Length: 531
Ligand code: G4P
Image (cartoon, rainbow, N blue to C red; front, side, top):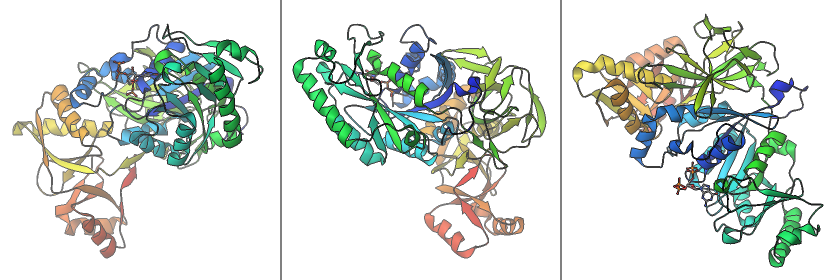
């Protein structure tokens, strides 16, 4: 990922589209809120608070899901900061890792990794980081909660380097921690940033310096702490890599800022970092060719569908990452999958808690298109070219359960509800070749509870999930004849997924091994591209 292409038009070049990844509780919500505050999108801290976080308990998660107005508008937020336009795409809040997260990360050009200064790299941080690495996403790191007792700075940096196998270059250096935390020395601009403990929403005081020997430092930092700071930085400059933009953009090095989101400290420097060093909208890969953001014609792809945002209207919003061109409201675009034109007359941009009509959008932006189910994850919209954007996978579920409607007369309703969630990407739905009913597949167990609650809430349909004899599913690839012959003789294992594609349901790894051994003419896959 490099910006060595010809310069992009200024409207595109100023865009930064990114996500925040974090282990629950590290401070993602608080940081998001401060971004919006500094970006002028909200007036007061506390407004995104309602979204809170999944809060890790089931009941709270359900509550949040019910409060979809808020969680949805927070799915993608746009705001300006200095000369930049930031598009912040939210990764799902709950701690069950889901493919939704993966797909969200296909829509961004960079990620901010938030870690808790006392806890370092945690399990969810590692998982999410790996997904970013698969896509070579540049990562900026924010070490949060420095106002609390934190680990030694070298220790934190070492842990990231060792655990995540990435070089870490300090962009700022903390002065003290916990009660003694004074602020940071900005290594990239030779500035002293001092935290204001009295007012959490106030931006830190900045003292410009000529370097570490500047006498002004002694006016603000007690002698003992100053001596330690000088020693630390000398050692850091000797032992740690310097910030190198090329390495960062290629995903080999992450700059780290230290701060305290709740105290609004270090946030502005991080935002400046995204603006100054973060990648501009990147080319997107389609199976036909690469699509460059500065192409004259508009194109984009759906990476997320959110249904029933407003239970009264049953509308869905497809979130589209603009890949190229300058979109204007009212444009007629080609919906590539159905080969039908689609007038995009009421696209929305999400500005904090408000939806606004998007009069225009440029490559890099995220717009929401309300629709009645035509738009699915992976779909492309273009000005006529038949493009298929790649890299939006569908994963084989790791947990399968049978689902039944509490009232057997409501089977048709249940089918409709399930298909809708399948299109949203919230679950896989399989219809076995033999017998009636459906099998639902998910990646994390919590998703069953969420589905049951949403089906009841949004469709008035109580459902029961019951254990299934199957544990996983594989898609089948091979010649049409080979697939049909195999399906005919293995009916008790066969089902169709929500797109009508054949899958082989497995009980044990042994089932998969057997097919691989006995049927070299077939290929079993654990992912398929969404198209
Ligand atoms: P998450 O979205 O990553 O799950 O984290 P969130 O922002 O919700 O923050 C988790 C907790 O950490 C919250 O406290 C929040 O106030 C606190 N926090 C965030 N940033 C900082 C920081 O810089 N310093 C300190 N000391 N705390 C921070 P909570 O008690 O769980 O919630 P609340 O009652 O404050 O809302």
